[in-house]
Image (tube, rainbow, N blue to C red; front, side, top):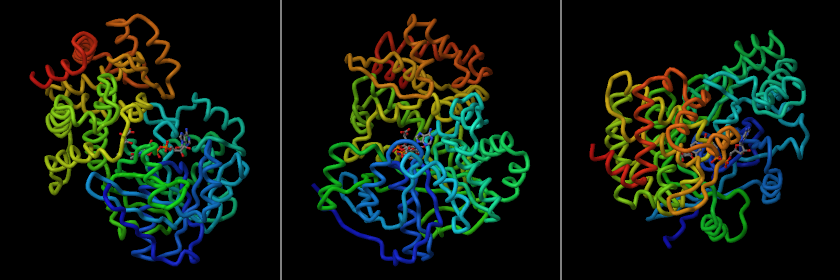
Length: 480
Ligand code: NAI
Ligand code: CS2
């Protein structure tokens, strides 16, 4: 095993104040948003300490982090090298079940706070077709009890209501989830919810709160046993919240803030006027290929993304999907080389140190398919260009929902629409099944689902996956 190079922050931790709140303190934020913050503090200084919160489970882990002085390890690893960085920027932890329902809204109301970042998963925004889904029980329950909310959107709005009342001034809310125009989506949800609570609160938010969009990128799998062993080895002891990730990281942030903020650019983030070209490139070429490999790889019995990439049928397909079906739908700045980007993605996906499970990426497919596979397909329907591999990706999701791989292994389903999807998957297979799934409007916008060219291609792809098997179907699609 490669030697682990150790490093730690150099700034004076005693100078930090609770100026940043991160909601959704999971694997990704530990290795990305807070890793950037740690670098920004080293490079540009400042007193931007972070309070990290989880709104639902995980209080015990937060208390373990408190007990170890709130430092944790980020191990950046690939097949050639490993670097372990001690992160020092966390100055507090919060969890409503442990600290009370007022804890997070009260911090949002504090004048010291200037920035809230979020990684709450795509489903955490409670959106439907880009707008707040008020029929979502998390939202409807909160609207009945707005002063003691539990949803992320409800907590943000109650915190802003208290902030306005306290005269604490503007604030920036920064979405860091894999959603298209994530800042705009967060803004739409917050304003719609606020409008249902107090009309002039919505007006105040419009005038005082910024919602920059971001593109975030670093592959950070859920920590597995091998990863836990690596963390313990590097730390020389148990290390709560320690995490393993790839060396690569990228953060593209819309340059729109309502208040002070850490100098993320000093840590290598890009501040731009328009994030959309970067996010489309990443959500399609990286995440679209990830979902393609996740569903079809799991069906074929591949445990991890690296296992898929070691299979020549999958490796060839991933490269063709990126360059022949996704890249042509993008409009990126002139200095962006999509061939080089695809080549780098192929290397990143082959990192066998990560153990990135296909079934983890398969989670929440109803929230991921629209931006990852359906959006580029819609672009192809406009131009008439072929999209056989994208069709297989959608068909792969449909076949995955039936819960069994081609080797007979049970496939786990975790999705906010699991009830509806399992009900459909329990019915007749074949064309009836495909039609039933195409009728799920929360996944398939009806103009697309009603397009006969789209329907025919998905039916054909599903028949191929179920008829000839995944690898043969992929090989045939690549040979077309
Ligand atoms: P994780 O499972 O480790 O953490 C998810 C966090 O979201 C937890 O803190 C959980 O409490 C919170 N959460 C889940 N559902 C929620 C809800 N309905 N409302 C409020 N909070 C909720 O997952 P991880 O790896 O941290 O990823 C989180 C998000 O970060 C992803 O969904 C994605 O949008 C983004 N991301 C993840 C990357 C990765 O490689 N892990 C890379 C790029 C982006
Ligand atoms: C993955 C992403 O789990 C998934 O859906 O596709 O978390 C992926 O690892 C990141 O977006 C990479 O930046």
